Structures are given as structure tokens and as C-alpha cells.
Image (cartoon, rainbow, N blue to C red; front, side, top):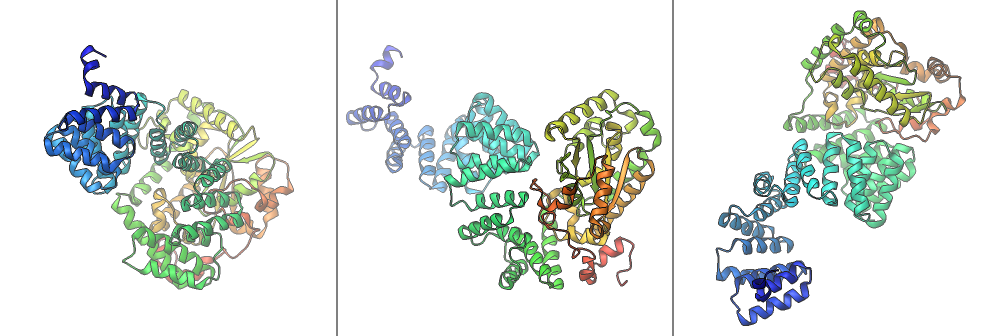
Length: 625
């Protein structure tokens, strides 16, 4: 501190303020104002001290006094904006912050405030102001963090991640930034990265409910269901009135087969949030709302009401459809499913997401043309010969979850679920070139990726003799799998395509399965997958077993023995008690695989035949037959 600053009363007060000695700083500023009531710096800085003490009305009064004396004081406008925002007057806060930027276009803090308040109000994305702040102050963690938040809210995840990374380089221990980065990485599907962020944030702020919630979501998406449920319980202990946490815990408990406790969680959620359609949809899915005609009618009314928000109508439609289907009211159930799917298609279209039937047909053509005996012969010895990997493939809802559950009930099999690990490997083999000629693949890359993936499977499966990956769409990548893992086993799951497609149409899937919301798209994709399976059965140099869902239901023991024998393992009776297996199941079939086999799903399409014209025509069938 210089001699001038030492003898300057405002400088002395500022030094106390910067040292965190706010009570002493307040006294010093008031002493200055007692001598000079119009001292602008003292009024402004005392206003900031009072903000930091939570005395917002006093802060606003002092800052307004300073601005009455000098309306061209940008820092005071920024400080007033901050106090007004904290007091809940966002409209006035935005006006004050914008006035500060007009007076001083280089005041980064004011642009940060503009961005944050625009985000609060939802009237604008806040991106433009945040970019200005980051440009003015690239070394400001607040500027970078604000830019990341604005970009996240706009769905620009890669750019948001870049901004959060820049903020964390300035301070790697900012829990709120770690939390936001974790959420962005979840959206990008980078679950290991998200977990690392949330775990560190939780270590810094162990009682932060938002951080724990993010951690629980990332754990669930990473298939770490038990830890996710435990994290939910920690968060609920801190915030028992958070309906979303009860729902999240319910989702985890469904995955582990604890339907009774999951039902209790959803009902607890409904007690806190009576309008939660997500809770009702989940209860309908696990058949805890059977026979509730009043509830079904209420949900159907929401589905039909064009004045209701689209997302609510979608959730209500799938929930109502499930309840009405269980009640045997098939015509009305189809109406609910049809409305929900139509709205889901429309909502995706607004975000630029749609199923590209022509593109999928071109992809199928490429796979059939690119993978033949010559391709596999060219890469003999390039991969790693391990019998550990087992790939269960087919259309979604064709029995893949059931087959994996039976296999995973064997003591030497680990069911890894839907891993999503092969698509990134395929991209590496193609060197980022879409529909690359496989003959141009690099043998070293093949071997490296095979070794890495087997290490991952071994770690995940804790050394199990067989590790299953039941991602249905790996059927598109069986060519890559044959090159990487020439001793892998493939289980092809088949089911009546009419039942498969109807079951898909009855479920609310994410953006990656946009084709499930249109009957014609369902038919097209089903036929394309059938074509691929026929191709693989002709050319694929791997051991393959085809299991028909209908045959499995009719002869559980015989087909289960056939499956375990195909896996090269001795028979174990535990495989017949698959519904008692407590492993986590995250797919839409998680209720069904906890039940003994039933036949009610066979030929279910007949209940809806009058409504399935586009599907049946697309499958090459007579709608009237």
C-alpha cells in the first residue's frame, strides 16, 4: 500500500473491504460520508459492502443516491444492477446493467450481468453479452463461466464445454463450473468426463443438492445404478421436498427390479408435485396404475387438449396409452400413442431432428456392399482373438434384454447392457470419413482399439468369461466386430416385426430413435435390419445364434440351454430364474424381464390391426389379412 493510499480515507476503507473486514469497512465509509455526504466513491463502495452483507434495500438506496449525483457512473449502475437482481427485480436489474454497458463499453462485469439477467428472464439467450464479456476479460472466470452457461442453455454443447474448460483453467476448484461442465458432458454422452466433474464438485461441496443431483444422473447414465441410488438418497436427506429426486430414485429402483419401493418413490413425488406426468408415466410402465380408470381418462384428456404444453401431452399420451392397453381399450390406447408420437415428431422437427429414411437406406447399401468375404480375409489376424465379447443384436424390443438377462444369470457371464462403445471405435477405424472403404483401415488402429476395448470389458465384467453388449444397433457394425474380435459370438434376436414395431411405437424413446414415432419409418427400418441380418448370415465369419422371441417364450428351458451352450459354458439352472437376477436393467424392458415369461405380448399387434395400415403395407403385408 502506498503512502497516498494509507492516508486516503476511501483507500483505507477499500483496503478493509478487500480484506473481508466488512464491518470495519462500513464504518470507515460512513465516516467519509459523514464528512463528505456526496463522495461518489464512498457511496458506490459502501453500497457494494452492504450487498455483500445481504442488506439489499440499503445498498439500492445508496447506489441510487450516487447515481442521482452522477447518472454517468457505470460502475454504480453495475453495482445497482447486481443488488436489484439479488432482490428479485430482474427487469430493473437488466435496465441498469444495460445502462452500464452503454456508458462503458469496456466494462466486462456489466456484460456478465446483462447475460446472467437475460438468462434469468428467459427473454434472450445471453450469448451475445457473454461473448462480449469473455472478449473483454478472457482471464475472468465469471466471464467464461457465464459464456458456458449461455451456450449450454442454447444447446451449443461443444462450445459450452470449451468455455467451461477455460474457466476451470483459471480456477480448477470452482464447484459450480464443474457442475455445469458435468451437465454439458452428459448431454454430449461423455459420461466418464461428466462423472469426474461431478465427483470433484461433490468433494468440494458435499452438501450441495444440485451437485449431488447431477452426480446421480451421470452415474445412472453410466449404468452405475447402485451408486446413483445411494447418491439420490444423500440428496433427498438434504432436500426431502425435491420431487425430481424422488423420481430419479424411482428410476434407479426400477432398473434394479425393486418395483414396490420405486412405486412409493413415484407416489412421494406426486404428493410433492401432483401434476408430474413423468411420475404417472413411470407408474403406468411398471403397472402400478392398473384399473385406475379415472386417472386414465385424466391423462387422455391432457393428451387430447391442444392448449396443454406439447411435452406434457407427450408424457400423458404414453402413460394413458399404457394404462388403456392394460385395460384392453385398444382403440383409445392407439389414439393416445398416435397423438404422443405425432407431437414427439413435431417437437424433434422443430429442433432439426428427424429420421432420414433415405440416408439409412444408403447406409444399409454401403454395409452390404463393403463387407464381404474379401474384406474379412484382408484383415485376418489384425484383431484380437478373445472369446469374452458377446454381442446381442437385432431390432429394439425384439427380445435383446430378455436374452441378455437369461445369459447374465449364469455365474460366468456379465451383462454389460447397452454399452455404446462400438460406434466411436467404428469412427476411429473410418478415420472420421463417413462410409469409408473398410479396405483402407489401418491394421495398427484395429489392433489398438481391440486391445483397449477388451481391457474395458475385462474391467467392467470383473474378469467374467463372457461379457455381453446388447446394444441392438450393433447389428450395423458386425463387420467391424468381425475384424476386431474374430472369436466373438453374435446372438441375433428376431421377433414378429408387427409386434416389434408396435412395441416401439408404444414407447417414448429419445432423439436417437426418432424412427419409432412413425409407422412407415418403423416398417422401413425393420425391413432394412432384416436385410442386414440376412447379409450377415451369409458372409460374417463369426459364430452366430438366432433366437426367435416366440420360440423362447414357448420353450424357455430349451432355448436357454441352447443359448448357454452357444456361449461355450456349462448349463446352470439359475438361467431359468432370470427374473430374480438383481442386476441393473436400464432399457424399456426393465419391467418385463423381472417377471416370469408370459405370452400376452405375442401377437399383440392384432389388437391394433385396424390402425396399423402404414406399418403393414411397409412390411409388405396385407392390412386386411
